[in-house]
Structure formats: structure tokens, C-alpha cells
Picture: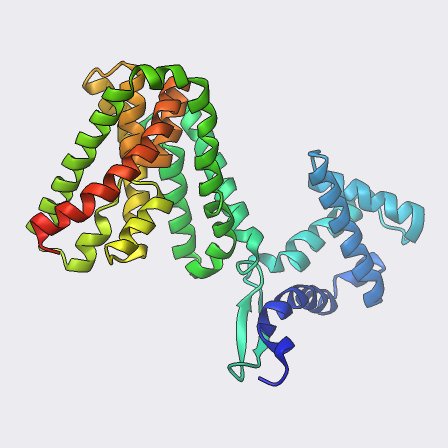
Length: 355
């Protein structure tokens, strides 16, 4: 391409398209006339003045109801515009701007951005292709899951399980492509590494326990990793899984970053590995607590190692809820488990599966 700046042109047009759709929505509505705003310039100024108010209220963490927006527009009208609108009119105007113009009456908002590399227009969903969509959706659904879990302490109300199921349903029912969601969801995914490193803090605070139980910790994790690898290989053989699938599921109890590395070295499929790792983490988070109670495992060190060594970072989150010692031991077991899998996984795969 002669002009390099035209590469990724649709991405640039996505942001322009957002404002273009607002202008288009506004100019096509006759409702403005009943409020005395006839010019497009007047309408756009009112829209962005209201958007700025909403942003300021959000930053200050103060309420922003329709009545609040009505009062704000009423103040602007009385102070600056003098159109003769009542408070009720201002409230209706706020509702009109939010639900009709900015929200497009709940309908999806699409904009065609020209792709100079493909020589064709690319249809873009303005809302779902914004990075904030995936990020905000994930955080919001997870927070709702946390609230539900606080009121109903059941294995199936686990926030991670709840968020996973709800987000899958939302994407499926709304026909939102996963790649659109992942634009913002990847922001949270990128935090896995730093959050795993941050687990070193509780580990440092309970360093004395680690020194005291060093032999039992390392030996128990080594035995667990070996048994887990053998069981995984036998299951893969029993269910006649393909070579790629078999090698991809081996590092299921290792944290994502390490699991992807192990899968790559064993010539597995990283995408399959990630799915299995996440599923293992969720199952550990959901079933870990009940199983510990069932088998009457009450020692904090043993609880932490069991959750962290099986459910990696997700299991460690559950361990932290049980206590600082459990969290520290779970954090330690993540690293040790990863090392053990690096050693055992290729050997077991070769002996049992012949790969």
C-alpha cells in the first residue's frame, strides 16, 4: 500500500462513526422542536453538555438519576437558554437524549468503515467493538456475582462461574462476536501475570511456614503432579483423544501463562489448553471448598496447597478467602506445580501415549 497511514483505517473510523451516529440520530428526530431546539448546533451542544454532566457525576461517584439530569437541564435552560421548558419538560428531554439518541432506543449501532486494504466496507458495531464494552461487561457481571454469592453461599453461586455463564449467554443471545468482547476482555486477561506475581506478598508474610514445611510441600506437590499427569494420560487414552487434544490438556492445573508455554513445547494447541485451564480453575473454585469439608482437611497449609496446586490462580483466589496462610501456600504451589509439570508432563506423555 502506497499510503501507510490508511492501514487499519476502519479502527480510526470507529470513533468517528460513534459521533456520526449521534449526529444522525439527533438530526432525524422531530422531538427537538417541542423543546425549542431547532438548530443542529443547539442540539449537539445540549447532548454533549449532558454527557459531560454524567461523566462528572460518575467520577465523583455521585448519583445520576433521570431526576438529577432533569434538574441539571432545568438549570441550564433557566440560566442560559430560556426556552420556556418546565422541569418536567427538562426531565423528558434528558430521557429522550439518553434512551433515544445516545442509546438508539436499544438497537445495535452500526457504522461502515472503509477498509483500504481489503477494498471493501467493513460493518462495525460501535458499542461492542469499543474496548470498554468487554471490560465493563466483565467487571459488572462479576460484581453482581459477588453480591449474589454473599447472600447465597452455594458452590453454584461462585462469582467466576456466574460471570462465565452469564457472559456466554449475553454474547450468544445478542449475537455479539467473541472477538468484539475480547477487545476489552483482554485487558483483564493481561492482569493475570501481575496478579500472580502479587501473590508473593502473602507468601513473604508466611515465609516461616514455608521453611518449616518445605519438604512436605515439595514432595506432596510432586506426587500430586505425577498422579495428575498419569490420570490425564490414561483418560486421554481411554477416550481415544487425538494427539493434539491429548497434549493440550496435560497442563490443566498450571496457571495460564505457564500452561501455554508447556503446551507449546509439547506441540499442543494453546487455545485448547487455555479452555481446559480455565475450566479446571472454575471447577476447583466451585468444588474445592466442599471437597475439603467432605474429607475433613482442616490444616491451612494442606488446604492452600490443594487449591493452588489444582486450580492455579483461580483456586488461589478461593484459598485467600479461607485465610492468609491458605492463600500464601496456594501462591507457592502455583510455581512449584508449574515446575513439576514441566518435568513430568513430557515423560508421562511419552511413556503412556507414545508421543
